[in-house]
Amino acid sequence: MSTALVRLWRGEESLARAFWEYAIVYGTLANAITTIGTFAAVAADAPAWVALVIFLLPLPYNVFVVVAVWRSAVRYQGPHEWSVLARIAVIVWALIACVA
Image 1 (tube, rainbow, N blue to C red):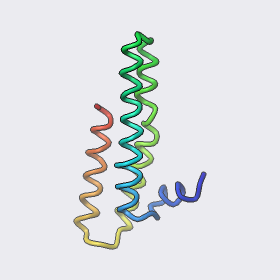
Image 2: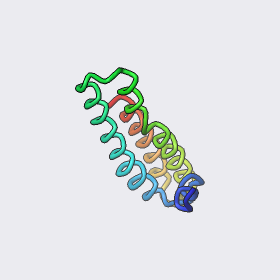
Image 3: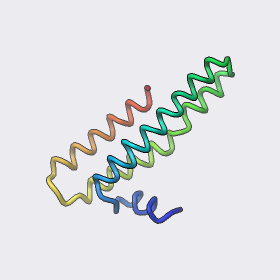
């Protein structure tokens, strides 16, 4: 595993980078791509299990990034409000990713 991902998993990356880069940018991009893939599979009359597998592909990454942001928030040395807001926002983001 790359050093950056290990640092992210341990919560050693900055809260801003963990949240904005890994969750919002990369995570949202992965979720959007798989959502489009799911719609394409359904439109192409692929078996339901194929659409389900495509839809669930980003789930491990989503869990990974929620844990990473949470750990980064715990280590955050700035105002406590930002730590709390990041935790709430990443949970809301993950819930939206599950239903979108």
